[in-house]
View 1 (cartoon, each protein chain N blue to C red):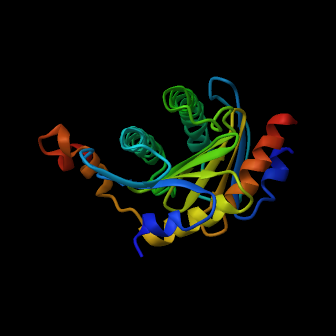
View 2 (tube, rainbow over the protein chains, first blue to last red):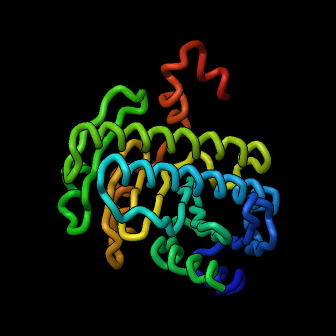
Length: 115
Length: 134
């Protein structure tokens, strides 16, 4: 799964890949979208931070409560007013909320990481 | 029907709850002890504050880019997922279509989160929070 294929997801406005530090590597933006490369770069940095925090929380939660099933994390999503970003460790996709399919997006970015 | 009860009626929802933006109260139903529900409420409130702070930064670079105010977030685990919309959270199993169903219900029932969320989240800092933020 590559960025062009991520853009085929319903309501996709942008797709991007990023380094372990959150620097933007590559991106696609739907024409007419308000999303800029600068926003995607910031988003990628926040994704790295949020994935790290979520891993910390998942590990702590499993250890404290004995509940399993969170690790390994498959991804993180931030749900904005008009769009949602779904990311994992390397790829992300931004989709309009009215068309978003979260499960399809999480599955797609998993495949993107494997590519 | 109350949102939490409605969520708990869906097969595959492990637990659901509500926390006060101020951080001093919570309620829940499902497979959590009161102490774990308290921890979950703290975790969800903290993450909500964090993603809202991040969206303020995005917005400062590209005004009206469509992110702010943040409505919620999702952490997708291997076999379970945590969903948060506004001040409601749900722990769910990873079953086909369950995440989409839960998110649709939470967005519809909680409604759009407004700009006053950050003021409520930061209320305990004191002072004129509204002026400091906006």
